[in-house]
Image (cartoon, rainbow, N blue to C red):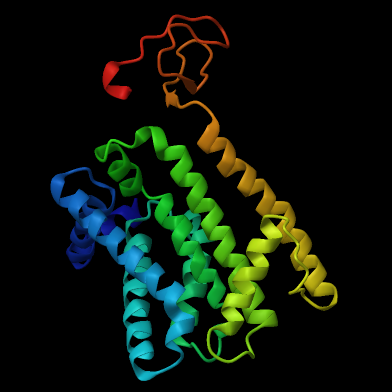
Length: 267
């Protein structure tokens, strides 16, 4: 009771108004909220492009200016999400929260934490999990491709995570973009099990990295292939057994036989 009264006191009123406004923007479904969320998604895309193009820029002044600007944006987003969190402890225990903190550290202290810069690839995955991503897919009339797009995002995230790790650990001393290209080449050859053998990773760490890349990479590659070739199914929970996905023209649930009433606007 005392906690509630303290947070409702006039001293906390501006903070509560700010929290309410941020919740409306981040979690709302109004036109203004959707525009804000789309704007944040566009910024995320720009950040991802900068991360991927980072090896081509080097460490010049222009690169550092953009680097610190992105750091300010991510710091603002972290602060905003902490403020709107209904349970701050639960928010702190989310893996993506700590990934964003690590990304922020690599941006603020690029010389010290450059070895962890490959974690920035997680921004690709977090963008694909956002609510505005699903909304844009539906508004574009591509709902039937949602699984394929998500599988592509998961595959690309893993691809650039492994490429970044391999580049940082094994090819960082190579001049220019040659090291990054070699790391990308090795990752693609390993994921696709091509195994040319012209580029290999030395030592025990190199072998373990290759094993992990093959196991998870092939799994994600197969998942992507399945999402492309399998028939499209619509998300409509069966009221009897709870089965989530059905054929778009399904009349009865294949699990329990219950008659379905899938609305036409969900097709």
